[in-house]
Image (cartoon, rainbow, N blue to C red):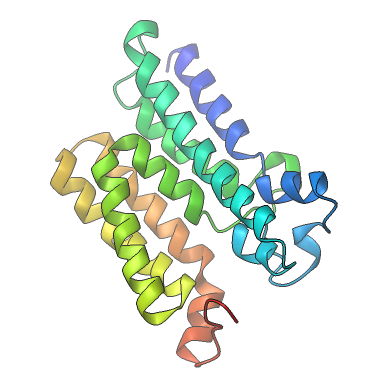
Length: 200
């Protein structure tokens, strides 16, 4: 693999490793999100502090880093002669960075916002379709984790429908699997009737 391809993957992972839940909490004088609630460094857990601004900034930052990493690699691939699968590799790398961030002892979030950013960067129709499905489930049933899992399950078939058998489609398979895996505790609580609803 050419050095520039490795560099693009590494930089995408490092960008993904920036946890906006931690960064925003420090800037706003809030406790480390690893220390309360679900101990998950994500917007939902940050919202438990009661600081809506912090939650919105976390959501925006985590989504934006996924979008930027993939967009930059896709945008400059022809100019720098990157492989045709470089954007797909960057998508997986930035997502893994969020889940297992080197800057935060590999204790990362569940990846919903970052996955959304990645999908919008791959194709706005993919991002919009998955987001719409998430909103329908989240607003209808008021269970964020279920909405995330349903959206993750829908992403690969929607990707193959849009892209065909391309790297951008295949990378959605591990993204979806990892996102569902990160929600396994939520699914267990859901099946036990103990999963909390949005707003509680």
